[in-house]
Length: 301
Image (cartoon, rainbow, N blue to C red; front, side):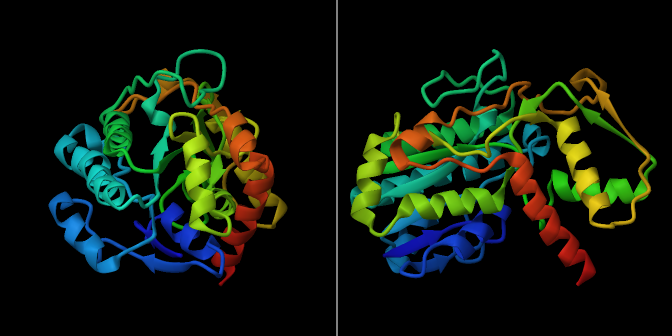
């Protein structure tokens, strides 16, 4: 099975390449090989690559900057997935496309199910929803994987930001009224590898069983950004990392204004993931412990 993975320099794309089983022939594409900012060129590039499965974690992820760069956000997050999906659909090739909790408005008190009505608050969320719609409209075998609060020991993300700030400042002020499940790129990649299984026929049947072609993938459990920050700092201290920070102060979203609005409730219901694929994900605290170990090892190296 020849699997194309886009966005390999990103957190999720890079983790997926490492996690895919040995029987899979991986075609790892970065922006030089497959530039999603040029959707009109995607078809001819795919003709040359000739994949059996397409996995698309690549995205425009600058949430605040997207408010000013709407055209680029929609081109990469909306048009490009559509071009990938139409090529795949014309050949009945399965496509797995990644989306986000930002397609929801964050209202309500329960975790979001796959069939809940999206209502994005930001350009980023709206562009990701456009990508979902484009993939679905193409009509081929597909799976849209929604995830949330992604982090890794590499790249630009909350884990690395908190480690840096905890070394620079005595006090951190972190939002405590946004709730979700911190989800490591490694957990997402490992879950996807289990989804793919041993052959593409099995994958296609599972995609057909998914709720509207969508499945939520996130760590189990929930916390706030404040709770996430507290756990990161505690984990770093437990591993002997020298930090400057003395206190972490919980604040409200209103006290930390951003250009783009964030969902207050980012929790994702994982029932379908277990029902269709038989997968239960690790708790976010356990995944975090593993990622902090990797982060500390990198710092030592």
